[in-house]
Amino acid sequence: MSSPRDLRQALPTSFRGYDRDRTDALMRALADEVRSVTTERDGLRRQLDEVTRELEDHRERSRAVADALVSAQQVAAQVRAEAEAEKAEQQREAASVKDAASVEASEIREQARQDATEIVRESRIRADRVVDEVAIAIKGYHEDTDEFLDDARTRLDTLVQAVLERIPATAAPVLVEDEVQAEAPVAEADEPPADAVVAA
Image: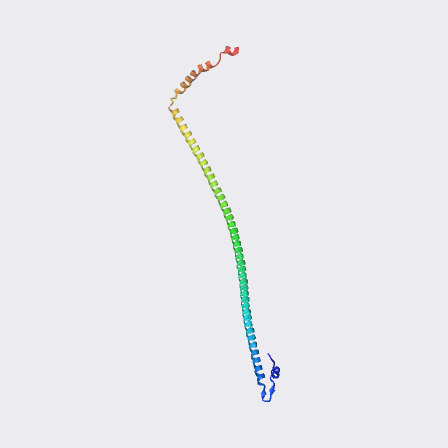
């Protein structure tokens, strides 16, 4: 575009003012230059609009990528925190289960020890009771046996006494003499002759 100095030089003056032909030519040249500048300005404006839109799109994409990155980081941090919390909870549960199992095992061992002690105590009580019962039974058996023997002796003595009372007083010597006479031949038959003894 021409400068103001160039325009003054391009418009020479005459007696009646500016030269008409030169002025018209200059105006046409200025109009052509204005159209060219306007066209160039519009093109540059369109390019600027396109660049602005591209820049805005780039900014939008950058913001979207940044937001996605932030969201991903937040999600990752949340997942990590949840995983660590779940791990800690599982560890606490495992420790609690271990402690409960240890306590239960100790209680079971203690209960088993108490049960065994109680069984041994009851067994000893039953054994002592059986021994006492057997001792009492043996004592009762001995007492019954002694009583039976005493009763048997008493009845036998009574029976013998009754039998002796029924035997007459004179029959006793005769019976004894008859028994001696009856046994004498048997004794003599059993003894060898004197000659046989001597010969032997």
